[in-house]
Length: 147
Image 1 (tube, rainbow, N blue to C red):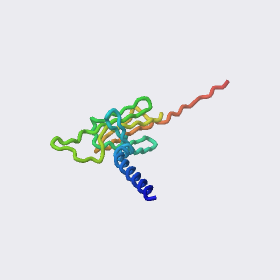
Image 2 (image 1 turned 90 degrees about the vertical axis):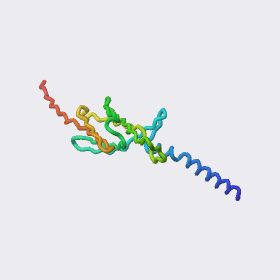
Image 3 (image 1 turned 45 degrees about the horizontal axis):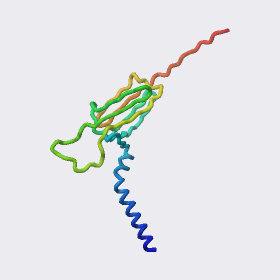
Image 4 (image 1 turned 90 degrees about the horizontal axis):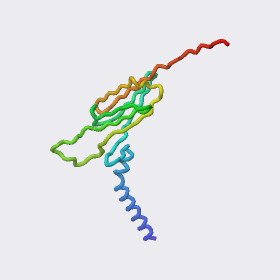
């Protein structure tokens, strides 16, 4: 009986050790990180606000400046890619980091009511605001003909 308990304890310890080794990968994956061809990309957090006139997206992209943003609409997809500016200090080396740095990527399907010609975006302190105005509803009166 003691041997079996000892084996179970050893197995539990091994599992705990394995989890410690894997934990950084799991944490990065759940934080939206993806690895492709040696580069890491992240899915930024987004808040969506809607009124009768517009839809506003508030996107968190810390470390990004205007030159690092690519925002495009193709067909019915709004695509955002953003690369943070390098935060390296030439005379220092990174000793410890709790988060990764990489490209931000996010895409949104747009409804037909979004006025694609008047979309605006601004960026301040790592927070991007994308305003998607809605088109005015078009009402067309149909005349009846007598037969």
